[in-house]
Length: 339
Image 1 (cartoon, one colour):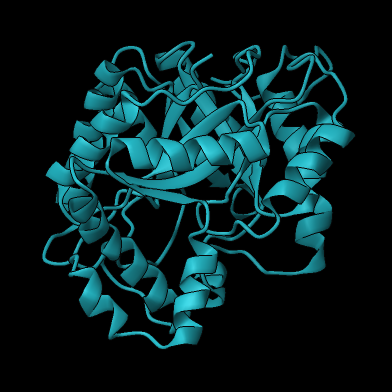
Image 2 (tube, rainbow, N blue to C red):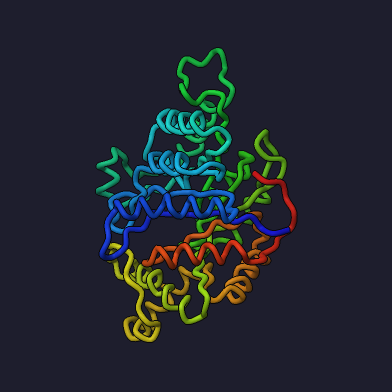
């Protein structure tokens, strides 16, 4: 069975451009993705980042859903501790009312930003955030489920929409919680792959059937850059490597322009190179045959049910081509019921 492919988009703001173009590119990519057969198009919540335009996540989801017809659109994810559950229920209930059967709600428990911005979001970081996350998820789920007549607070729109909820994470905590609640789980291995296999195993061991799912459903995040030649793919992949190198050095900014791989080798020391390669281990770049082999290896190791692919390239044309080629790859998995 060919594995379902989805797209994770942070609406990258690239060097020499701005948020306006980033958001226009997001809609353009989503419209192409729909014709290429991608299952989902998710955007991620981040704040105060010069290279990311997806801070108002639900607004972008509405923008993308309104400009497409069939592809599922959702969050990968909404950082729930930044928001009151009722607010998210109303936002996604409204989206589900406008675009029925097409909206996904992926939830994370990280802040998606730095400490000062967290304070500006009216959020504090404490042990209570982790302790309260399961209760917030259940409260949100209750707002979207069939309403209880005894409920005094309701999400309108929202009640009865039963927007599919996913839990996202890069740790065992989120994996175990998703399993315990019987929800689908997506692992953020596109930037934090260290605990991938342990988290997937923990999710499957912990999983309890629910009204949502009768068996575990795992989606794995990967980075992929596919081009017509190996050299072209390696060239465009340097933008992502440079971004992660900047993160390693404590610097953030717009997505860098690509450089020749030989130039990159001269820019980092062995320790930095190892750090970047460790963060990007769940990645595949190359011509179609090479990328397919690498992605198939990830599927074989994780037994994932879906792949969600991040492809941050400086050139929008190259990004479109990458996703077009990716959609044609023959990557297989065992047959499972879709979430």
